[in-house]
Image 1 (tube, helix red, strand yellow):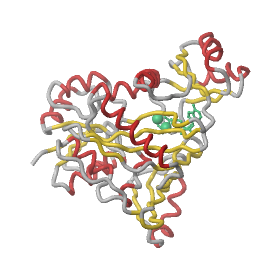
Image 2: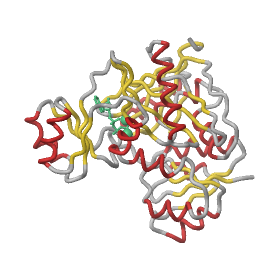
Image 3: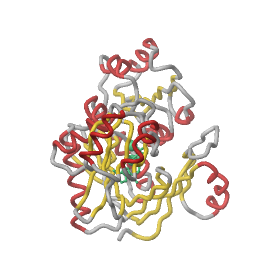
Length: 349
Ligand code: ATP
Ligand code: MG
Ligand code: MG
């Protein structure tokens, strides 16, 4: 049998481990902090990303290494890569870790992104505003998630406050996209170059955090095809192996790419209930070098995240017949995702 190493032990690692177990594959989780995924894995290493001996032992215990956490230090990845393949590859990870290189890459392969400009000083923000215009969003280039590390500017008068919110971090200014809806495409590429995409889902965010994903998305057939084709273009350009999430804005002038995530994605959790092969199994298949599975959708689904105090709703949800997924997190905190629920709303339309 073969074993897969996963960097990061959060809920995504946990669901990857469950999918791998179903395929008879062993999973070794590497996580410096609390690891919900450790409960269901073959092995768990709790060590820092600076611990060379632990990293070496981890890599040597598996055949291939993947990640559910994107901010593993480069030195740790260098060490791992000297011992085992990392899938998806380092370039895909580096490109999506930095919002500036991500936007430049997307634009470079001919896709539409919001107008953007790098910002590394208060003065630079004025210059960026002059090219990008207002309203706009200032975002840290690295480490942001769930809308953290962002500040909105209604006009140039908000520049002082927005720059202060970056706390000195390098940033990027993005023009505000007037979108009608947000959708995402979860797509996979196998080691043989085969590409498979799930149907686009429609996403609703609250306070910068994903609240629900609904499939099918309200999207014309031609935009749905565009979404899937552009995901394939991204996968091929990165020589990608594994599952990728692509977040898109739907506008009257077509699709604008917001960001990409080089991993399984929260907006793909509906696939657990809507498809025979879900995004977690698809990712495991790809990184293990197996053929991709059939990701076609048999049902319409609404996925709802359980965030913070939503845990109080678990007993009625458990009684409702919907598919409940809880991550086994030790602590409930405001704004923290603790589970999700998938509800079938009918046969696939
Ligand atoms: P995630 O948890 O998805 O990684 P994130 O912190 O990387 O989130 P973004 O996806 O950049 O954040 O932004 C969060 C949300 O803010 C978007 O889904 C969208 O609703 C809104 N948003 C972000 N950028 C823009 C933009 N340029 N124009 C309009 N709305 C935007
Ligand atoms: Mg993001
Ligand atoms: Mg996002």
